[in-house]
Image (cartoon, rainbow, N blue to C red):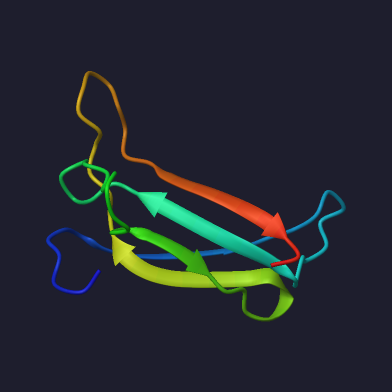
Length: 85
């Protein structure tokens, strides 16, 4: 997010069905930790519902999530897709 500390990150991808064909009518949601590895549990920072571009593609800009607190907890981004959005 603009103005937040951290390494800039651009995420791109495709939403495909089990046959490898683009799901053009799917929605895509993402949620990840901030640069310090903390999730915004009470709000919506670093959460997004990303519209799909043509052929099931998506792209958004953010910052690289930090490692989660605790031993051996890597940075991660959670995502989910829902058909028909």
